[in-house]
Length: 128
Ligand SMILES: [Ca+2]
Ligand SMILES: [Ca+2]
Ligand SMILES: [Ca+2]
Image (cartoon, rainbow, N blue to C red; front, side, top):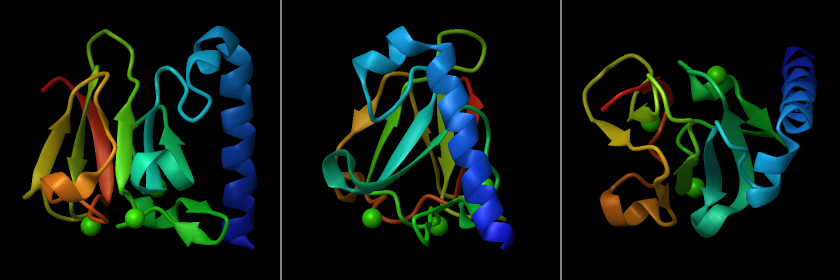
């Protein structure tokens, strides 16, 4: 029941963000302006997860029965310009080794090409 409640809250949060920035959302229906977004498959296919803030553990982010840990096969940083425009993605929840900077605006459609398929476990906004 905890998981179901988290999903409902996540959906509610996303809905409110869409309402707040309708014009930006229209430019990419899969990933709102200001968010870091990941997809289950290449080319923005399959389940997706989006965050406007940091997330220290993808394992509790469930979309349609699947959590985000080690799931990302494509990603897109649609962060806003400012103090923290980039995203640093980490392979592990509890270790900093093996992280990667994803600059603002970067979309990677096939993470296998850079050795990151099904690897991301958390991220934080930064400047890198
Ligand atoms: Ca995947
Ligand atoms: Ca999480
Ligand atoms: Ca991982």
